[in-house]
Image (cartoon, rainbow, N blue to C red):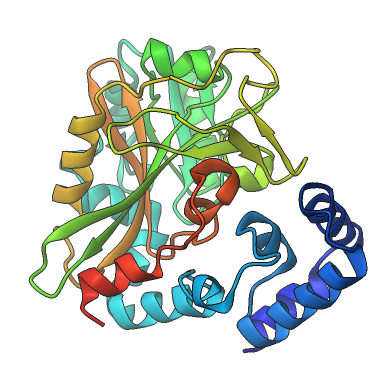
Length: 331
């Protein structure tokens, strides 16, 4: 209960009003009514002002509102489906890499347990490497691609001093790079294990950076859309930052509708297999990069977002995902 109030207290009043004005723009419902209804949803249904807009809650009857996965419902899934004893595997990126090494599609090296000679061997025939701390999240604290120029010993000492580990740099598929060349444009697959430990893909979201962003995270300003079952962009992309939709990429001007993710079926099979590696964690969001030779796991998140796959502007659907979760979980 306190979590939603904390979110409300920290909410930007300006953004709240902007969302209310946007709802008024497309619904023509008076803004004062919208604000009152938003407040009711915040305190009764635990739906924030942005979700109110994204879910098209204005004038939506209760029976349809009740089909949406809310903040509380998502938190409950996390708590009941994911054993807390195994959560740290996903929070610790190095430990995650060690357990899911067969699904990464790239090599990595634990600098803390490696000699300089091992690091030197790892860097052989490489022009750059990817470095990050074990507990990084949302693209924060990552030292990105480091060019292997100059003295390798200095680089090794820097990595060791800052408790970083290294991976091969991801070279994304040329088609994926067209979406935004400065970032790795990942697909977020969310999987759910049923009572028989069979993996179900709940949705797939295409994310992409804009401008010269090096990450595709929505919280950092990136845009996204929900993909069709066969991996195509069929609806506009959305930006939380601008509260706007895009049929063309705002930086590259690339036509987004009709784009097809390469190796999509292979990516689906990859996350279904990965979902069974730690069956004690039944609810996971997987960030998947698409390389020239196939998909590769970037990381897993045991608390996937619930708002993006229910965004009316990128799904064109008037109901939420709760019935699908309940069908699979037989609730």
